[in-house]
Structures are given as C-alpha cells and as structure tokens.
Amino acid sequence: MVRAGLKVLATAFLAGAAMTGGVQAGEKDTKPPEIPTCDKKIGTLAVTEPENRWWERYQLESPEALIKVFVSQSKCFTLVDRGKGLAAAEKERALAGSGEMRGGSNIGKGQMKAADYVLVPDIVNQNANSGGKHIGGILGGLVPGLGGVLLGGISLKSKTADVVLTLTDVRSTEQVSLQQGHAKKTDLGWGAGGGVGFFGGFAAGGASSYANTEIGQIVTMAYLDAFAKMVTDVKAIAPDAKADNVSQSVSMAKPGKLYEQPSLKSKVVRDLDPGMTMYPTGEKQGIWWKVTDELGNEGWVPSSLFQLAK
Image (cartoon, rainbow, N blue to C red; front, side, top):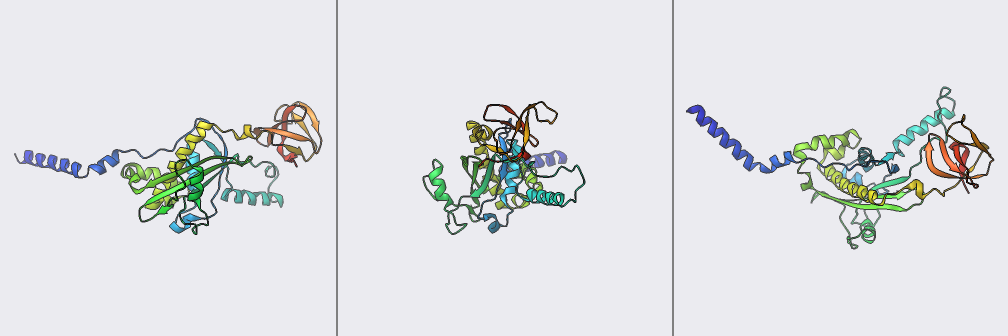
C-alpha cells in the first residue's frame, strides 16, 4: 500500500511539474533554427565589415566572423578571405618575394581568386550620430514596406536587434540584394533544447560573444533572419556575376599563347602579343582563364599575363 501510494504521489508530482513547466518542456522539443542551403554555388563571396564598427559598443566581435559561418554552412557561395587570411597570405608572398621560400612553392601574383560579390553586415541605425549614417532612412527608400520609418538597431533594454545585409556585385557595383533582419529575446525560446549545439558552431568560427551572450544571440538570430531572406531572394533572381560581366576586358601585359585547354602541353590556338584585348568568359581553373579574342577565337591563357584593359 505504501509503495502504491508513493507511486501515485510521484506520478502526480511529475504531472504537476510538466504543467507548471510546460513552456520549458515545449522549448526542449522545439528545434533550433536552420541556416538555409543552396544546391549549387552562386559565385565567390567576400564578407566586409561596415565602416561604423557598431559591435564594439556591445562588446561583440566583428559580425564578419558570424556571417562567414552562415555563408560556409549554406554552401551558396565560395568564401574568399579579405581579412586576417589575406594579411597572412600577403606575409607569405612577402617572404617568397624576398627569396625565403624554397623553390617550387608557387606563391606569387596572378593566383588570388576574385570575389564576385561583397556582403556587408550592418545594423539599422536610428541615431544619425551613431556611426554617422541614416541607415534606417536609407532602408526606408530601398526596402518595400519600411516606408521611410527609422528603425532601432540594437536595444539592450528591449532585447531586440534590427540588422541589414547588403549583397553587391563587385564588377558592376549592382546591389543584388538588400535584406533587413529582426529578432527579439522571445525568439530564443528554443535555446533550452538545442541552443548550445547551434551557437557552439559560431564560437568555433571566431564569434564566441555572439554565442555566449544574450544580446549576441539575439543579433545572431536577426542576421540569420536577414540571411535566410537574402538566400531566398538570390535563388529567385538567380544572379550570375560571371555571365553579367563577361564583357569586362583585359589586355595582354606580356606575350603569350592562347591554348585549347588549360595546359602548356595543349594545342596552341594562336600567339598573343602585348596590348591585345581579351574577353574572359568567367570560367577559371587555377591560374588559367578562359577567354575570347576580337576574332572570336576561344581558349585558355595564364592570368599572370593579363592586366586590366584601359
């Protein structure tokens, strides 16, 4: 009888706990948000910091590291590093130029991959004196539905974040996509169930303050909201930076040859003299670029022989 009574009490206690903590139980069953993905690469992307360094006011790292995690996991773009990675590469090239590298290291000019797009992560700014930009006003003129209303950027008091992502075509300077993202503290309700694993990836990617602080997590969710919209937008318009900029020309800085395939052992289509204008098709293999000449001949040329046409 005693055991039966204890069993009844235990059952009643668990049922009561489930009722009083229903939101928490529901939270544990809620899956964390997912980063959208693409079936194929859209192009090459560089992430660039905005000028106003807004993150320093909130003891956060640069959003560049955060966005790079989104981009990398989405598989929508091939990332090129124009930050710390570029600085390290320049040091390696300096060592090579000074003769410190062993022969065959193959470090030199003409091998850096160009970015097709630049992505800038910023916040929607209400205060004109904060960062020196009327970003909210700018968005009001560009994004449907904002109607010119100035929005708050990040509020520690209300625990909200409004951010913006701008995707620009490097060659044409065309603004491919501009998306606003919003998040608030209540959007973190799933955190009890899977937040640690979700935000852990950002900490590993160099964005630990976004993973370990409440306001950082809110900003992360706002950027994820904007990034998801951007991916949807980009998929719908299917931009092709290479196709859109095939008319961009280069000229031969040195004499060379036009090859049928990206190999010095391939058949030569024709000789190329310094000053001749070539038109890249956008297709590349290592240092080799596929190009056409004024006569319509098509082939491959090492990019180290090129310079931008004047």
